[in-house]
Image (cartoon, helix red, strand yellow):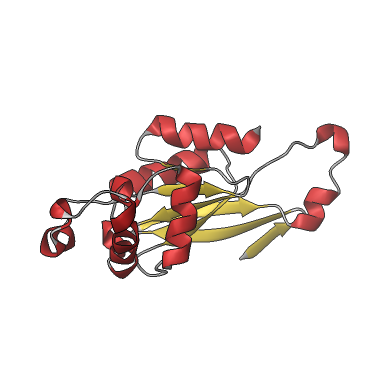
Length: 165
C-alpha cells in the first residue's frame, strides 16, 4: 500500500489481468473531518471470481463511484457455512436462490433434484461451502447489515447509493 498523503492511502488490487487502484481514508483521518462536512459512509465487501465479467463490471462501477470496499476472492478465501448463513440472512434469500445450478459441480451433485425447503437448507449451505464456485456472484455486503447480488448495473448502483445514505 503506497501512502499518497496523510489522509489517503492507495492500494493496487488485481482482478484477473486488470489492475485497479483502491483509495481509502484511514479511520483517524476520517475522524478529523468536521461534523458539518461528514456523512455516513458504509464500507462494503464484494465477493468475486476474477474470471467473471459481471464481477469485473461491478468493481469498475464501484471504482467509478469512489466506493470504499474490499475484494474477497471467494474461490480462494472460501466462506464458511456460518458466513454463508449470515450472508443469506442479510440477502433475505435461501441457499438455492444463490446457487449456480448450471455449473458442472451442481450437475454432479444433482442439485436440481434436491428439496428446496427448510429441511434441506443445511445440505445446500454445506454444498456451497464445499463447492464455492456454485455461489452466485458478485455478492456485495455492507457494514450496515445490507447485502445484494450485484449481477446488474442497477444492483451495484443500489449498493453504492445505500453506502452513501
